[in-house]
Length: 424
Image 1 (tube, one colour):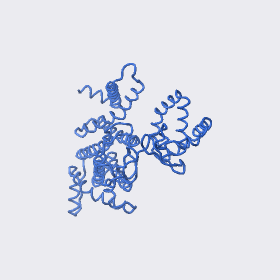
Image 2: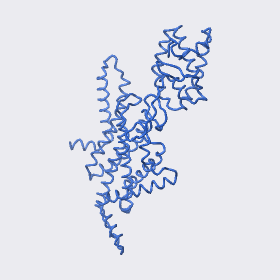
Image 3: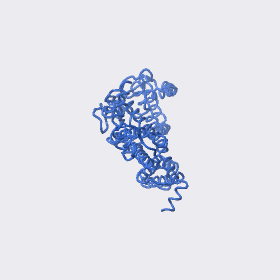
Image 4: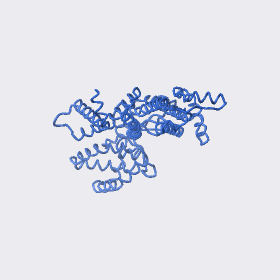
């Protein structure tokens, strides 16, 4: 075991990446075997992509989490290990921010408040928009406390500043714990189809908690090894007692806990002066729907067809996409605009006149159209797709007018209930 630790110590990052890739390879191979892939149907490109995704986006964060968990209970004296653990903290923070943002984009979680109507499996925001500024400022305050403690030598930091930095980090720990409770109250699926994956949004906060606890522990040990000068020499017994209390590093966590509430109160008071509500810190979690701490009931989600032109018609700005009426597709009500009707009428003609070509076109759409629809997550994106499809709409219209004696009748009949016509 010692031999392997020495090898890991020489090139820790290389070993960490290699182990992640090896574990990702095994996970991808196991998934392929469970899915019943055989030699002839095995998709090697998909296997490589799956290995990379597992290695970098799942296993590497998990291994970093295990390292931080182990570091909580070990305090190596070797400077090489100390530098490695500090670099692990920096890498974890950077990757945590990036991966959290990517996960947010790929999930069904939106930034909409509880009173807004959503579609399909979308989820409302877990943090109320009116309290996001408060949460952001307190998060930055906790980050500032971490930067002070982890970057500056203790010999250059007064004990009171150290305690306030710890108090700020305590606030960050409470925010992380609250986020984990909030987010795990809803175990819905990702837009990519990964079930019960909300725990990945807790991975970064859990790492932040372990990093904060280790930083505090390391600084307490570091303070006990310093050669300190004489303390307060004045006649004020209260200042003398405070100096004596703070010069014992074992008292810092208690002092930080006591100062956490005044620090939090001061921060909230300043935020109130800038327009935040006094109870925004509580409302940020309770003025929500779909989550553990939510106290609001959102309106039921509407069904939006994942045909990307249906998404455009329903999701774009009215003055751009020009919705005409409600229609019916696959038993669901959908918003219909002229572009959608023209495209569906063109497909009908293609199916009637050239069924072989229609099957190929349909296969291409089913392969690429649905992923495009999932990317249309804002009115602006729907507007852009609508404008990009305009030249194709004119081409479809030209074909319809060239092949049908009553083209406008065909267009007008699209998506009407019980017309007996094929819906694309």
